[in-house]
Length: 159
Image (cartoon, rainbow, N blue to C red; front, side, top):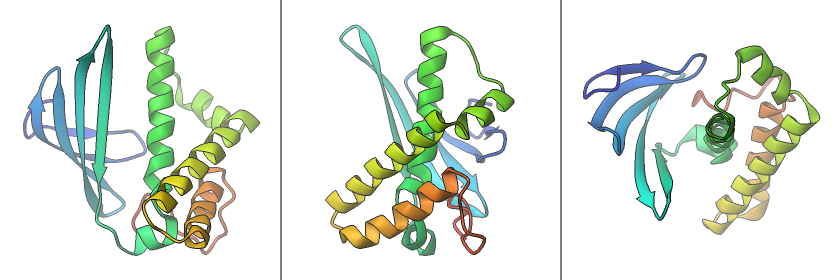
């Protein structure tokens, strides 16, 4: 319901409330998942003969961050944007079963590993000790690859 005060729900993921809406160039919303609330701000602007999509996701740093680092949401956004890129290039949407199969394929696992390593590098560039960033990103990469140890909580829940 893309209007001020409208609600949205991403299947199997977050939902929230639209807090700002100026179609077709901007919207902002809460990002509610696993009992935690963060905020997204999305802008679409013209740049030469193309469009630039800018996404900012603001979250409160706490225990979740200490366990998983920025890749916990970063890998998810990278996956979503890869899906958007595919859709814009081909016009074809991907059904849930096909997406799930890709995520457990070698190509999907490599994508998630590369994404997680890039988020690790960004974490280090932001001033975090490389060993700490590696521990956090290794946990997150393992989770997304379906290799999470049973004592690790879901990186998207904040718990």
